Length: 289
Ligand SMILES: Nc1ncnc2c1ncn2[C@@H]1O[C@H](COP(=O)(O)OP(=O)(O)OP(=O)(O)O)[C@@H](O)[C@H]1O
Ligand SMILES: [Mg+2]
Image (tube, rainbow, N blue to C red):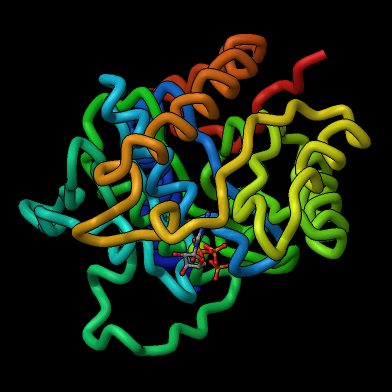
């Protein structure tokens, strides 16, 4: 019996040491990333991935060191929108992101055997997968890690928000009334998690959808309006022809959004320092006053 207890204790100790090592590794990696910003909307299909990818590319064009994490583990597609020129590699126990035009990308899509495979992963597995990415990915020093979030207000986005210790979010909306209601839900969800919202981007603005919904929610909720992106073919182009790299007009629109959110980012208190020797404490950024 005594012997068995000791074995159990040993196993428990080994597992604790392993988990400490993992947290330490995650802490080391996160401490090299200045800003972790999620692109989110509760509603599907409003352009989260499009905005996340083009924002990352526009930031990289301005000289920032940028990583992009596709956290939509159920339906990853940021790799398709970005059109990677270098695929991620697994080498000596570490994961090296794929890359295009200065944006480093990690996505579960890169590790799927079949592109159209359905992933049905519940919270703990999502959390585990993200933690493994955080533990193994060698991003190097980054100014920004942009996170393409899954839609919804349930398990998946919640788990992602918790696992990644996000600093702030950019909310994406389309201009119509119904979308505006969903955007309020999205923002309330982020606030419940005690994470800052840098502002709202109105995507697919103009044409059949009208315009102004994004600005209206921003005003009603006392959140900055960061700018609008037109509903137009060139704004939705992807892969080889990804919008920001191809069209000057798109580049300018994203540059205005970056100017606006960097101003907001500068108002936030500095993100909590994660001391690598202490492992990664799961803590949220303090809210701005
Ligand atoms: N401003 C725009 N003008 C035209 N097409 C756009 C624009 N923004 C996005 N699109 C197109 O709309 C579709 C949906 O965009 P996207 O996949 O980025 O949405 P999403 O919010 O990430 O969706 P999901 O919730 O499924 O993750 C894509 O085909 C994209 O190319
Ligand atoms: Mg998406």
